[in-house]
Amino acid sequence: MFQDTDHPQLPFPPHTRWDVEGGKEAGIYTWFKEIDEELENGWVLSGSQKMLMLGGYSYLGLNKHPEISDSAIEAIKKFGTGMSGSRFLAGTTHLHARLEQKIAQLHQKDDALIYSSGYLANVSSIACLLGKNDYIVCDKSNHASILDGARYSQAKLIRYPHNDLNRLAEILQELPHSSRRLVITDGVFSMSGKVADIPEIARICRKHQALLMVDECHSMFVLGERGGGICDYFGMNPDDIDIIMATLSKSIPAAGGYITASEKVINYLRHESRGFIYSIALSSAMAATALKGLEVFSRERGPLVAKLRSNTELFTKTLKARGIETGNSATSITPIFVGNPIKAAVAARQCHEQGLYIHAVFPPVVPKDKAILRASITASHQEDDLRVAAGKIADIINGLNDSDLPEISGFNF
Ligand SMILES: Cc1ncc(COP(=O)(O)O)c(C=O)c1O
Image (cartoon, rainbow, N blue to C red; front, top):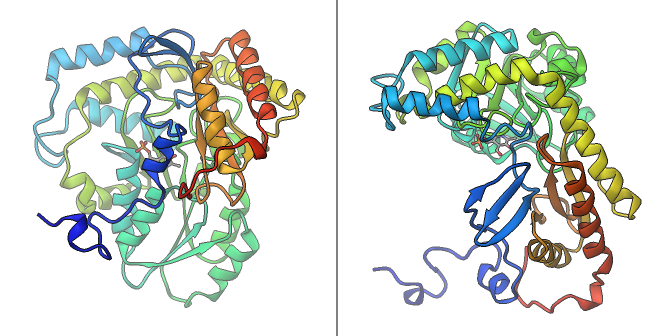
């Protein structure tokens, strides 16, 4: 067996980019905290501690919705727990086919394709839509799965500074005339909650004959008056965005990711996308969950989105009143600025001690010296709980001085 000590210069596996052991020793490693049960109103049980979940993605609070949970149980009774193959072979049930139709209808597109996760949807679609002589132009703050898909495609990857649309236009202008080019951006950026200026990006794409793909993982089902995502928010025509990707694992409490686009694009992906063809189908339980989730969303979207918005406003207002900076998120993603990464890590630990399940996010995921606690509010949170939580977070951050932070050697981010 190849041991670390055999080759001190070439350790295997290589060192992690941050000092996990150092963080654990300093008592500021708060990740992978186990949850034993999901309770009501955004509370969870972790061991014997009841904690308010402020780091989850169930934006509309639909996880454990009885009707949705029952649909998963029904599907398991009918199809069992496993899938016996990829969608291409034995893994397509009528639930998958119906789910794809519903998604396409929701986005007013021709067709849709579901993958077993959002990550896979991005990687596997982007990887085969473009090739060696093509160009992928991406916002620097896009999700890792977009970057991974772009690298996997072998297309030339060009990244523009976050939200710098002048630079985007310049890049497209400079590309060889006859080249195929795809611009990809998150609709809402997952760390800041900021919304990309998609109408302007679409205009630039049209001008420079580029196709546009938007990742709607954090915008679909929550952004816009009725949660219809980017098109709803900006009043855009669905045809202005060529390819939409989103997840079924956040507001819709299932798993899986999807691509929705023209019949030609989806038909191509269905027959060429390796992560779709060579991987197990989304489980029928999750397909049923997502279908029922879409039904509940369609029925209750107005009030759910309104509640999500008012809960978020209450939370940020309470933090701001206590002098805490929260940026200008367009959604319930609430970046709580701390600055120094060690301070953010200590704040996260103190939050955990006080029953708040929340995590710190460090550079390079956020800009240098801009470490945050990242909260995401849901429609199921109770107003009083949010007031108390915001007060506790403000007390913790305001009570921490840089000079009091532990000296941690080697805990670099
Ligand atoms: C912007 C964005 N894209 C893609 C994904 C991947 O989605 P999934 O969790 O369904 O794999 C995520 C997940 O957090 C995301 O935030």
